[in-house]
Length: 187
Image (tube, rainbow, N blue to C red; front, side, top):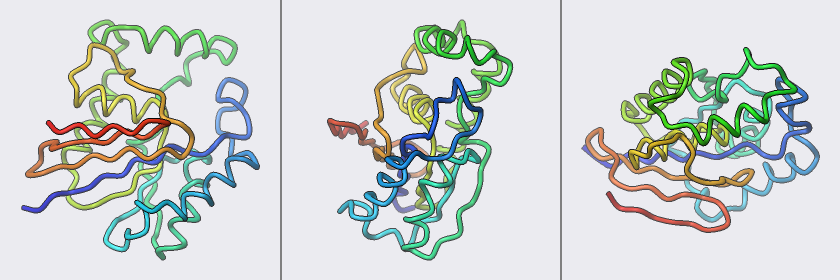
């Protein structure tokens, strides 16, 4: 079996925070960021990739320029949706998230544990090269699972940063996180 490459791209800057708007699209800067990824050297050969996006507007809008460049249909997949927080009052979301990122996985609410487990299982079950447009906490959840971290938080992926995961025979072979620093870790 050949190596499978998963490319997680965090959405561009949102027009408003998730605290004040349930599903914002991209800001002007976010739209510019989504256009800038067209010129990334490591994203120039995606013809053999499928494109998946979270159902959130900011992720879909980020995906459109790259999908258009490669003439790809964007598959909307709830699996890669933002961390579940619809039951949290907007004025308490920031405080809630700050608490969640510090909480040990063993103490997380069941819906958060189920969310992160479903994401990780989907990663391991991937059957082909895929670009996934998603969110800060989704990417953190995946990397924390790979590293068997006690929490679901690992790093600060910047807007439109690229995190790559390489699978071989259904197992994580290595990964490269994207942000200001790029780190490649062989497992």
